Image 1 (cartoon, rainbow, N blue to C red):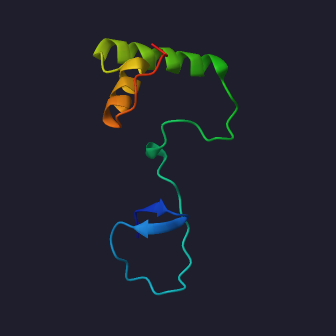
Image 2: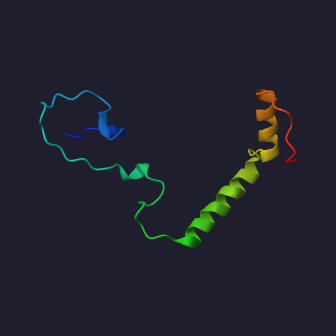
Length: 88
């Protein structure tokens, strides 16, 4: 029998109800496909991280989805009726 679920606040929340009785012992195995990055205790690979950051930046540049920080702050100031800042 295979049950699927998600960890929510440290507890397993099953995707579908189960007919297992209370007190039944189970073994949980994480779905490895869900992890994009290595385990937090994996050795740090600086070169790999730099490559990932460069790829991410190139992807953002290619899609032109980013906004400048100045534009974001201007929108916040406008939304909350703050006077314009001097950081521009």
